[in-house]
Length: 290
Image 1 (cartoon, helix red, strand yellow):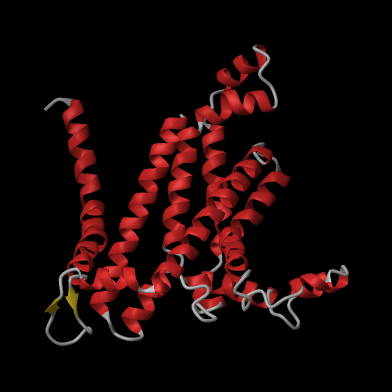
Image 2 (cartoon, one colour):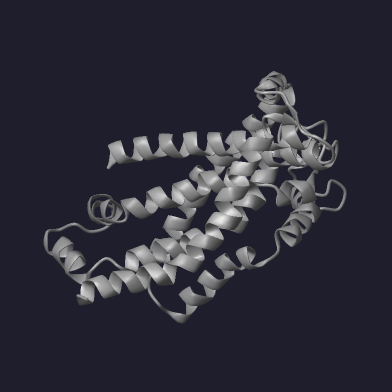
């Protein structure tokens, strides 16, 4: 057997267990969820086929559209906030000094914390009476800015997006540092000889080389924002009056609070479809840009 064929066979056998696990716990549940979305089912008893009725009810429910709007706010804030900040920090912390390693660890630390802990920390920061944010605003004489950040429908969704972005910058920082470190020294030397320094080097050399990495991080931002759940459940529970409801919390409430498992399965399928649509749109735009 040729050595190349043996190598491919070994790689295939090595990947097979992981592939089977992914199919069993990743793909199969998605297929089952899509199947249950066509039924009226409370989790017990017989399934009642209803066709597309669950999807029709979903599209007529204003809470669903509010949840979708809130998720799109999270997607926009993640793309505008997480990716540029992580890239900027990666450029500033690229050198492998002791100080930079400490800052990298500090930026990555929120990712290590439990999402419940992050939600509790920021819940106390936003607390109207004794929270850190309102206390600092009082000290700075900005009394007009003081408000109940998680209860005011005008700002609570934006307030919720801040801790979510704060907790997710770290992984993208690591991804960007790895991409920047993989740029060969010959490329940097050639850019320097050609006079490409500073912002000129950034826009004409560095960003084009790591553009595929940027596309991947944007895709991760989109998928992560559409499945956001823990932070919102801890800080607001989706309230008040569903003003911070997300698609994931909407699915959870319908599935495990009122026991509409068929409807909840339809919502989960819709989340996958919306995610695929946004990722495809991002791929189309960024590939045209590249």
